[in-house]
Image (cartoon, chains in turn brown, orange):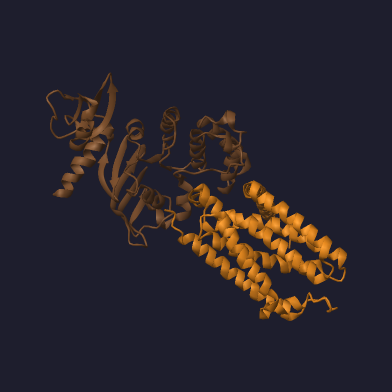
Amino acid sequence: MKLIIKDLNKIYQNGKIALKNINLEIGESVFGLIGPNGAGKTTLMSILTLLLEPTSGLIYFNDADLFHHPEETRQIIGYLPQEYDFYPNLKAYEFLHYIASLYGIPKIKRIGLVDDLLHKVDLYDVRKRYIKTFSGGMKQRLGIAQALINDSKILILDEPTSGLDPEERVKFRNALFEIAQNRILILSTHIIKDVEFACSDMAIIDEGEIRYKGPPTDFIAYAIGKTFEFEIEPVELDEIHKIFCIVSCIEKNSNIIVRIVADSKPTISANTVEPSLEDSYIYFQNFVVRKNADE
Amino acid sequence: MLMNNSELTLNKQNKIGNIKRIINFIQRVIRNIRNISLIFFYTSKVIFTKQVLSIFIVTIIYYVIQISQSIYLASQIFYAIQFYTGIITITLSMGLITGEKERNTFSFFLSSVHYPNQIIFIKLGTAMVWVLSLIVIQAYLYYIFFPDFSPLTMIIFSTINMSVIGITTLIISTFTKNTFIAGFISAVIFFIHFKLLPQIGPINIFMYYFNDEKKTYLPSLVIIENRIIVIIVIIALYDYLIRRIRKMEIT
């Protein structure tokens, strides 16, 4: 199972270039698409779900052009939009039955399918509760269930964890792993931790262009030997901010432990630490991309 | 001519095959009816929000007061029915698209159906079934007071009129993200349409039919012609609506 995006471009009617020559090959697994707000992630997601027409370019799923077979494409794609609010006056199971009936799934199959999906996303016990009483995480899991209702081969989740509390985010990430079996799951996010813990392949998109494509483990290599931690006094923080690219600050006793990314060791007292995906992302955006742009 | 055994068997098999095909067809029809009923039931549940229900109740109260206090003539009741049903049509259809936009579910809804116009059929269809039920009830109540009048004519006239109002509301709602703005603009257009109704050429011909002094209540050719014009308008509006939905860029 393969999704191939070839030379994809999108220019809006107002002249804004949203996507520039996107080329991607996505296989069966959880694929993370990272990028800052306004990078073009949602535009790419909308094109993949046929909600938006590209200006040029092609998308193939197992050698079949998605845009030439829109009806079939809608049958294999499940989509969970960014920040949505499902029908508050429907109960969870009613909502799934509604979506299933829109897909034309017959009653005999529908009842079992809805129950299975509710079990899968851990919402079976609350199936008779109104959606308006659900927490953010529960709504997201219900959203996943609706996206899976047609047994979609490609599942597209646009910023699914934004607005979730840490516990809900972990629960959601764990659910993703099981859901991704035998399908392509594209996770668009600006939360790096989600990609670090859930994805086996990723791409970075910025200003409508793909800056990086490969496994997260390879991406982390960018910041090996470039991530440092050192202790400073609170009064020094403003000055450090001006000089270095800070990833995080943690208060320790009366001092602050600063984590930065830099090309060389900032001070003698600084310790080189093992980078996370977040460190690599900050390093990549601030050093590699900038360096390439200067060249 | 007598048939031999193999021909008889073949004939029998063909008959069985035909019966099976008919049974399959009936089963498919039943399945589709069940599915459509379910979609209708849930779409109605989605449409009838608290706000819609309150507007619905307020309009009914206003309507009953109007009818009981000041209307005695056939044409006045006819106007009241048009006005009341028009407001209900706008109330039911104003949130069909903007509601989805407000909840940010329009994109996922569009990707859940095979064709974009399916969503319009489902949503507008559900709203229109409710409107049609109201029209039928009103037409027969009208018939009780004015026995010379054909309820079927009222049903056809009102349904066509309300379809125009419903589709116009939906078109307006594709331009805005706010349900009440869509409802307000539609109401203004409806009010202008309602006030101008008797003065517009081809529509005036139909209004003549409801003149109290006129004793013949049989539809004439000009009335039918007028309805054909309105049906063409409906088809054109519907076509424009579908093209708008297709063109709508989500982001």
